[in-house]
Image (cartoon, rainbow, N blue to C red; front, side, top):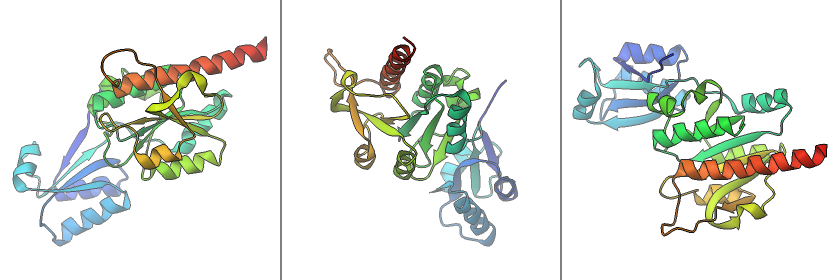
Length: 253
């Protein structure tokens, strides 16, 4: 099956897309255009918490495939987003302690796709991404996930910190990747767990880092100081897998 990010152009088409409930990742609007139809579209976009970008006519012309954008172009997700509760339900159905990935500003779609692939193979029950300053579920992400998006739910949330605090009330513990943190082998990463991976360049943001229970570092012996975000996600995820398997083995011994 082939999935592609959908481009929607023209005022009526964009407005109907919002009103039909279609998931719109981003809306591009001609800067300075504030007439009635455009105001209606941006109002619908805000109801859906869609990112709105005001750009020049030249930019819209470059993005347009039809040349008839009428000052608005929307990008719809290649995949529908799930809810965090869907992930918790999935873990419950499998009889497993919940295991979630939370991505703090992953902007490279190839990294996002690779992390979703890792999440699936590590047995995670879902991936949570923020609405802003992060890649959405584009066709590139779908391809990079190697089919994992068909099986691993992805939720897009407005406030990652609020989600963390809410899940803590449900028994979750959170570990974030941090080069200056405790060596991952010394941490107890069993039980309901959220693994937080930060931006490719800046890492996990301060507020998110402060919300986490553990700061996990990966031992590195080379001459450079960091791993690619998707590789770091894989290394930490499989330490969680190792600890879970060891705990399970002790319980059945």
